[in-house]
Image 1: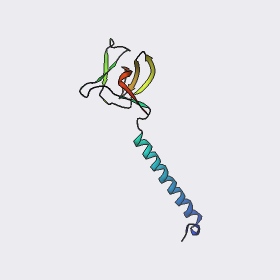
Image 2: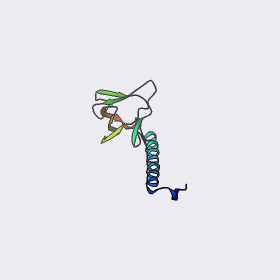
Image 3: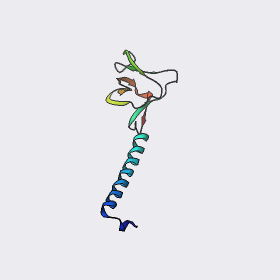
Image 4: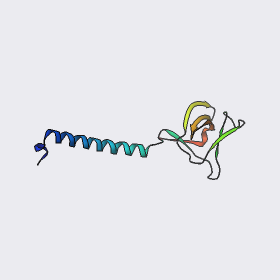
Length: 105
């Protein structure tokens, strides 16, 4: 039986199932490959060290948290002061020096 010989209902079901399969495959590939696209990652920090998160935009401010080397999914909040940027990531919000962040396209 060719496609043209199938009932209209069978044709609609086949079309619907193929559309669902394509949508699933497209969304799966995008989500897994780009979970943190458009965010930042910690760089230029030795494997044994951490990037300090500070309460304000300078090394004089207190340390309120840390990011391990290569931590990703860090979002800039928009505030800047010289090289210092306010960030949010891993449930933490504070200031880091921007030279230790790399954009993940």
